[in-house]
Image 1 (spheres, rainbow, N blue to C red):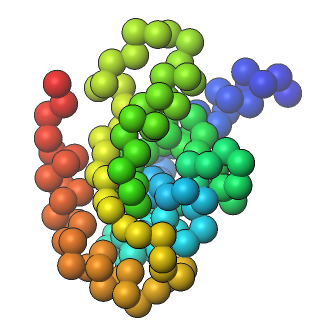
Image 2 (image 1 turned 90 degrees about the horizontal axis):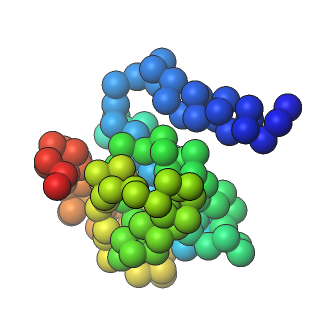
Length: 144
């Protein structure tokens, strides 16, 4: 199977309509092992369709890929990384006239890299942020 066929198949799976109507949330941290999966698990219990990835191409367990980026309605990062995400997205596009409206919406958190996976302290912090409300607000914003 050619690379272009594989990429097309992956894109079709990413936009498969049978995934349900819940917003698709991609959770990102540096390695995708502790904070991002904890955020993803937390949001899954709230009814969101979630995935977790790492931003580091060197050591992420599941690295951020164009397919997962394309899949997401919204990206939640464990730390500020808008510029890095947008630069990565631009590098994936052969069409250099990519507009900001072509990117998934973004929520940047500021979670220190000190938590274990599913840490009760991190879960309590996530709960205090009222993420479902923030997600609804961001998804309903108009992009310019």
